[in-house]
Each structure stands twice: as structure tokens, then as C-alpha cells.
Length: 209
Image (tube, rainbow, N blue to C red; front, top):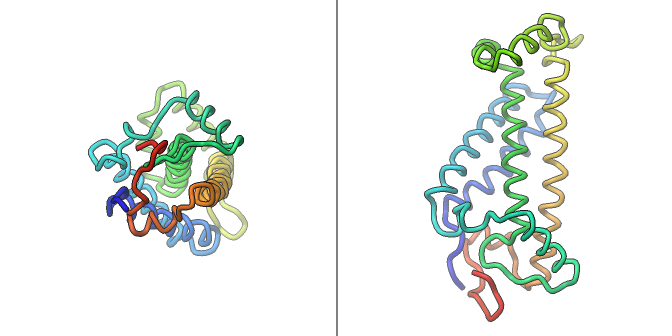
């Protein structure tokens, strides 16, 4: 066995799982908890981005991020049942990580825009002049900023975008879990446990480290 995932990567992974679960379950039910879970998600993403640049070997984006051609080749090999084993993230897993980080960033950002009126206005004023007036006109028209009959969060396009991001994240979670299960079976290695212990089986002939 060798150490692959450092403590920060492991804590980030499971903390993000917990924060997203809390945010999803508390949506429309316990708004303060939902908002704080969103802030935790945003903070975790910021830490992971920094660690992806300065962190340990297998945590760095430069180690696992690859082009779309390599991802497609890996998926083809996977469909054929002969994909290589990667000690770090495989190309499909790397693409999933980027998709999750981008989707969660969009979810957190749109949620923040809906909830923080004063700070939101500061962001809007900093937008390019083509975007800011349209955004302000839309808000004045009542398409944004309206409240439902029960005084719940703002309606309109921004809320719809926020929900699209959240639903897309659920889809990505399902694909991610399916990919982990498939890779664990194919390579006879419990990847979920590896993300807890940080250890994986040492490289064998044909493995990519």
C-alpha cells in the first residue's frame, strides 16, 4: 500500500459531501442553515483550488487534469473493459472533479446573489456596462427580487439558474458514485475507503502513476 490522498484532500472530499447534503436537504425548509451550508461549500472550493496548485503530488491539477481527447480515449477503453488503472485520478474522474467544482461554484454564486442584497448590488455595479443595466432593469421589473406568497426567496431567472445548477449537481453526484463503484469493481480496489485512509494498492505493471 502507498499513501496517495493527503489529509486535506480527504477532509475536503467528505466535508464537501456533507455540506452539499445539508444545503440540498435544507433548501426551502431552513433558509439560514441552507445559506451557511452554501458558504461552507464556497470556502471548501476556494481551499481546494489553492491546494490544487500548491498541494501534494496527487492533489495538484497539473497531475490529473487532461484534455478532452484523453478523456474520450479512457471512456472508450472503459466501455471495452480494458481501461488502465490510475494511482491518482483517472481522466474520467478528473473531468468529473472539474465539472463538480464548476457546478458547485455556480450554485454557490447564484445563491449568494439572491441572498446578499447589499453585496449583490456591489457586484452588479462592477459588471460590464452592457450587463449591469440589463440586470438592474430586470430587477426593477420585478422578475428578480420578488418574494413568494410566504415571503420565501426571490423568484425569477436567477433562482431558476440556481436550481438548474443544483439539479445538475445531483446528476453529477450520481455519475460520480457510479464511476467509483465501477472502477472499484474493475480494479478490485475500494476507492471510497481509499478516500478515507488515503492509501491505495501500490502500482503494478500496466498501472499509471
